[in-house]
Image (cartoon, rainbow, N blue to C red; front, side, top):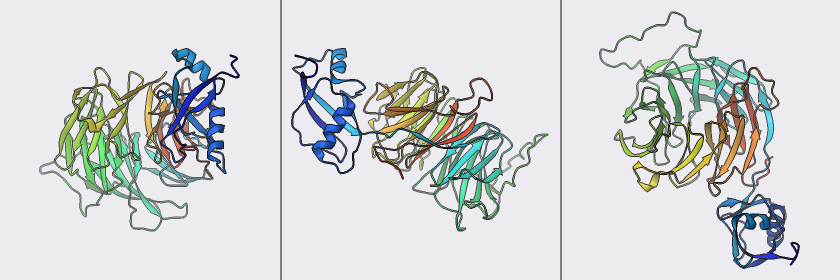
Length: 440
């Protein structure tokens, strides 16, 4: 029987809205993704074509059915179960912002506004036309992490930015989203940590912040601005450095509500989970969950010789899943609901050719996450296929090199089909359509 006439028996399944009746189809062996996608669209009689990806045994189909089956020893007599999902549209670069220093953190959570934090101690806000709206000096050392607070400052079109730094503080600054708006206002300076802060993130459900530090501690904070500086009893004055950069006033001094202690080495990331508890990871090769109210560690997952350097938590899924990047060049997925402790293997593990430096999870797609690596490539992974990234794109590829290897990706954010990437060349914004949606 010729390649053109030979066929496989197949049934199709999907978790999308585009479901087919569960019946057997005879599929030509020569067919690949494009042909299968045409079949789904034709059977469903879709008015507007929707591209699909296909998974067989949890692996994304990248070749013809004949080639896939031959490589895995699947015979013609077997019935293939093929899962299909909406494709991610090819990534498209929208904007590029050059900065004088490394961009260590980014955010695109506010539509039409792009936030960056830099090694020069400033955060910057740009609009969609690539115009710089604000450049605000807030720290005497490199900014390491930034986020928007969920609620505003109480002033029209003004939001609050939280920035963490290697100077061991977090600053809260009220800033207008308009170029003609009011000047930035320092609201508070958060004091707890005695070493650089790795991350700061907000709780979308409550006005709370969580910080992770190299000093092995995690801080929980309210975002309420105190009327007066908060100090500990008999607290020593902070030492002054001989030379300081010119920065904005600090605002009110604020202390944490809760301090979480359990990590034995640097804490590289922490975030609130959907139930207002928290999860963290560190260079002690552990992922820990926390009861924030009680201030105790409730579970510890230990991975042998896997120092974790970044953490990403899905906000879409009702499942408790956390992505962590490690110095062994892997992205691992752990199920926090399993209650496993001690040594535990990840649910999935994705190997990178270069160190994965940062993770961003989609705001609309529970199955996918994005990683940025030191090779300058952003990769989109689907947890339903552990074999290869479902899409990738080169960041800073068209930018002139300032030094050898300066296309490293240091930070990512992914919200509503838009990706921000920060690195040694500045910041880029990409349109990354999620689940087959063509963005306007």
